[in-house]
Length: 127
Image 1 (tube, rainbow, N blue to C red):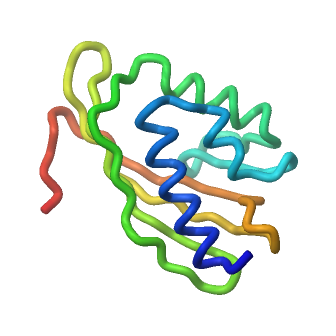
Image 2 (cartoon, rainbow, N blue to C red):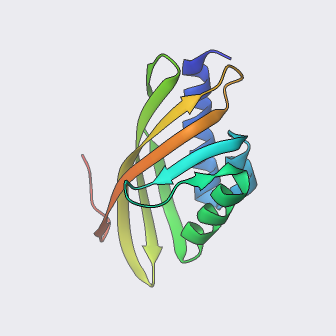
């Protein structure tokens, strides 16, 4: 699969999966032995099972109102895309803004991904 196509599929699927908390849909984007790191100093999640556990944990207290990913930028087998999520956690509105960096295999599945993000209280307009 062409990497630009894989990257677009990745962000559109994450948009749908995050908005509906569909962990299985999101996992369909990754190889069985994928590696994922959420934030620089957190441990790496090895394989789909650890990634699934992390995603379920991160969705636990979140009520999503909006998920948007930007058009991915692609270089070789790697893509990066920004995202913004408006949600409610623990009864209050929050905005999560960040980026994901993804490396794909030749079949268009994610073999490695990293997220960097920040959370602000309230729903913040990013322009």
